[in-house]
Length: 194
Image (cartoon, rainbow, N blue to C red; front, side, top):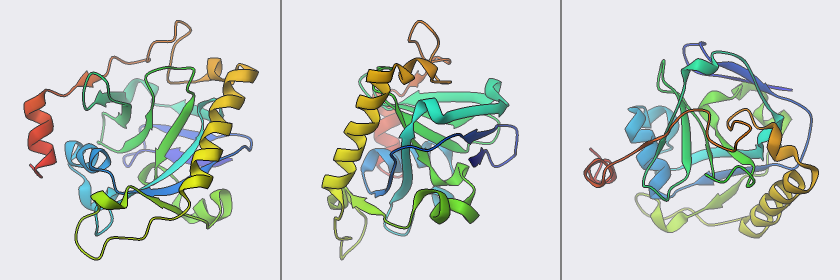
């Protein structure tokens, strides 16, 4: 079991059980935009703009309190759903719009940092390095393993029906909160570092 909470403690939860998981640092522009939207880039991003993410099946996630503080955005009408705490702006994680693709990429800032190595292992994949800030760029590593484990997480949730146990989607398959879709102007401003 791994504890999850927002910075102010209004949202608390945990990961239950065990299962396939990925630990990655993603240098994509979209992850940086999300951190900038929340106004907490220094806490979320490393010096080259990377975000540490932990991918797990959504069915392992349980909220113990504060679910009413969940909020979400999408960077475009075709983008992922990016969940965060409306109370303090802590990023929670990223999901696909389709609830049957049932994984969540938990952002490191909502996790118990004292137990991440113990609970998720020390092997960290590095992806989307072409979008990293500065030079030299980080070296990409572990992508094939990430893809294989991601497929396993999604396929297992689909086959077992575990996707129906997501705390982020209702029984009709809709997100539990209506995500705000950023306008093209908002997105351009955030991409430029605004």
